[in-house]
Image (tube, rainbow, N blue to C red; front, side, top):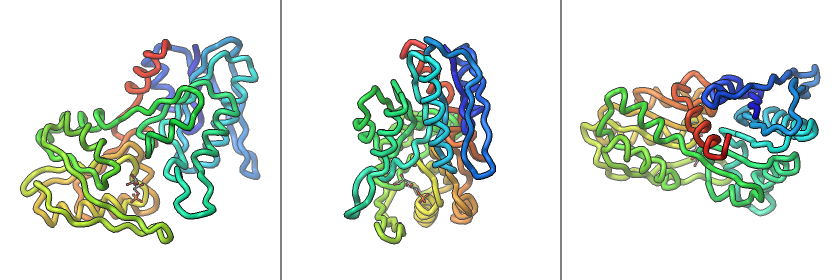
Length: 293
Ligand code: R5P
C-alpha cells in the first residue's frame, strides 16, 4: 500500500502515512508557464493499493485537475485500488439547482472523480452529506467536530456552549457539545440567492456570562461567523471562539471575525492555513485502517 501526498496536502498526507506506517510515493509536480499542471508519480504502483490525499480548497480548479491527473495516472500505472482522500470537497455547496439553468456543480465533480478511476472516496464535513449518495463507488464523510471540541476542552473551555450559525450546522454543534458538555443551539440564517448576502436572525440564547464556541463546516468570507459573534456578544457571552473544518478564510475574513469581537479562530488542516491548529490525520488514518489499510 502507498500514500500519495498531493501538491495541496503534502503535510497532511505525510502525517497520514506516518500514522498508518506506510510508504509515501513521491509525486513530482510543477506548473507550466501557462498555468497548466504537470504531475509525475515516481513510484511502482503496479497492483498496489493507493491512497491519494489532495484537498481542493482554493485554487480549487488547479487542485481538482491535479487530483484527477493523479488518480488517472495511478490507475494507468497499474494501481489495483485507488482511494481518493479529499479533505475539503470543492463545489459541494452547489448541490442543487437553486435558480433555473444553474450547473449542479458537485454532480459534475463526482462524475469526473469516478471517470478518472476513483474506487473509494473519503472526505471531511462536506457541506451536505447527502451529496455523497450521488457517488456510485463507496463514499464516506468523516467529521472533525469531536477533534475541534477536544482542542477547546484541552484549553479549559469545559461547559462552553456550542453554537451552529445556521440550522444546517446544528448536527456539528450537537457533536461538539457531547465533548464540551455545555449544551448546544443554532441560529437562523438566510442567504440571498442572487447577491449572496446573508442575514442572521437574532434569537435568544442561554449564553450570558458563558464561553461559546461557534462550529461550522466552512469559514469562507467570515460573514456568517462574524454575524453570529455579534449576536452572542450583544447577549452577554464571555469568550467567543469560531471553529470550522475548512478555514478557507477568503480575503479579510480573519480580520472581519476578530473585529466582530471573537477571541480566536481554530480550523483543521483539511485546508492548510494560519489557523489550522487541529490535524485530521488521526481521523483519516483511522477510517483508512477500518478499510483494511
Ligand atoms: C454555508 O451554509 C456554510 O455552512 C457556511 O456557513 C458558509 O459557507 C460560510 O460562508 P461565509 O464565511 O462566507 O459566511
